[in-house]
Image (tube, rainbow, N blue to C red):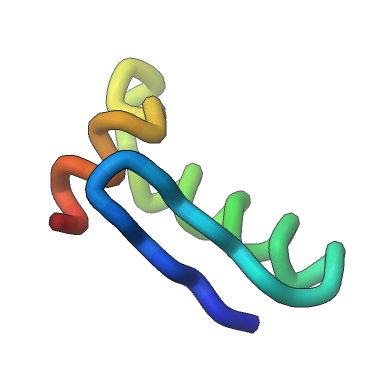
Length: 46
């Protein structure tokens, strides 16, 4: 599975189960529910 992170985008390439697993893992790592937005995730990654 590959994950490409840009300034305003997140692209996941892989099988459906790999993408679901990665999204769940990212969601668990976000912590509080208000920190789960894609915008906040991308801001931390770049």
